[in-house]
Length: 235
Image (cartoon, rainbow, N blue to C red; front, side):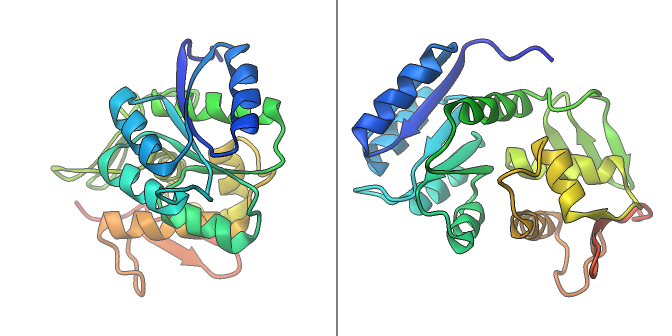
């Protein structure tokens, strides 16, 4: 698969040494990196440049990473990768609940970080999979080419991760997928991932689909197995 050219990244990181080392590595591989040393500057730079991907540290001065993530998600659909030394599962869930698409704990491999940036850029440009044909399940239409989801006449505002998760489920409507399968299909690899990340994104999707979490009709939980998108939803 061809990697998108001229990927632009805003990297919000208060550790200037790490930021510049990472910037140097990424730019040696064709990524244009703009650095921001605090949350407020990160917000301003992102809204000014509209980059392909935002790399976001959790612990930041002025405006912390979680609040910055929430504010960015409310204003833009740019893919957000959390990059932080706080590796506890609760902190990862906190970042995902704020709207992050991916999570890379420090210390990270520069090569892996580059691969994740490229993957998010591909997905945000509608090239996440082998086919870009629309998938229709009842009144729900997932259009990979346009990165658009329509529920009847209403367009849903999804993050990149949510879009790809719903796409995977829609392409296999009526089939139960385990969390591990979903992590593999959406991330490309289950490495460095964790089960609860899927639960968080499914919860977000349910809310946007208008599903009742206690008695969902779109996204069905199969206890002890995983999740399924109902194949027979009426129009």
